[in-house]
Each structure stands twice: as C-alpha cells, then as structure tokens.
Length: 144
Image 1 (cartoon, rainbow, N blue to C red):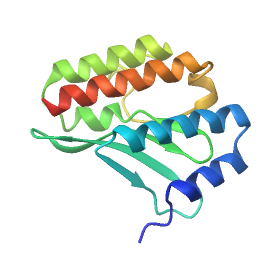
Image 2: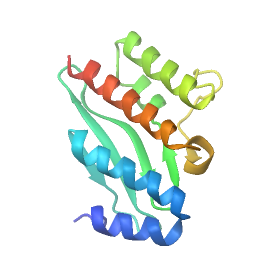
Image 3: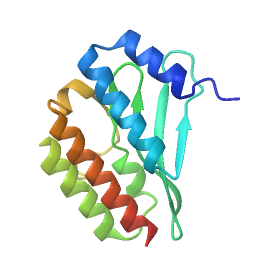
Image 4: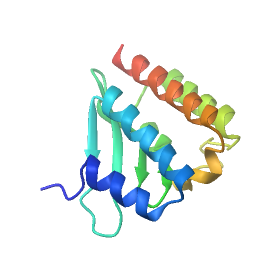
C-alpha cells in the first residue's frame, strides 16, 4: 500500500519548504496529475516522492522526473538513457534541460541521476513553465 498520495504529499511539502518552493512543487504536482500517464507516489517514511511517468509503445512506462516533499527534483535522464533507444528523443530532452537550467547533462559530466534543490533550478515561474513544456514535448515524442 502506498504511504503517500497527493494530499499527504502537498501537506508535507508545505510544512517542510518555504512558500515559493512549495508553490513550485504544487505546480508540478498539478501538472503531473493532468498530464502524466502514471503518477507514482512513494512509500518511504522519511520524505514523500512523486514520479511523473509516461507510457511509450516502444519502451514501456518511463519515469521522466521525480520531486520530493523536502524540495528536491531529479530529472531521471540517465534512467532514460538505459531504456530509450531513440537517441534523438534523449538528445532533445538533454538539450532542453541544459538550456532551461544551465546544467551540463551529458553522460561525461552527469553520469548518474542526482537530486537538485528546487530553489536552485526554478528561480521564477517562467522556469517552471519551460520545464512543463519540456516534459510535454518529450511525452508527446515518446507516445509516437
């Protein structure tokens, strides 16, 4: 049985994070509930997690990003590298993330998926909007 759900996740994020961070988390939760093929809630005791997953005919159900109640995000690009054979989709995701957040996501400099502080990557609402657009674009490409 899942320990976390939308309500417990949001309540915990609001209690653990500053208002501007919990607002970003809330925006990403709403977006995920509206657009993800699967929203997966974590089972852990220490912190809540939510994963945005996309169904693909070619590759199965793929996680695209994960957020936590303590204000972190994981872009899961290396997880995709091990599952998606269409390199053009991976390259598009990598380029969009790099242009959005000014982080080098190449395999040499980003060999494993790590959590980033939400406040470090989303400084203004426009950053959230660009990320949402990125996820929608990659989801659409994976659905093809």
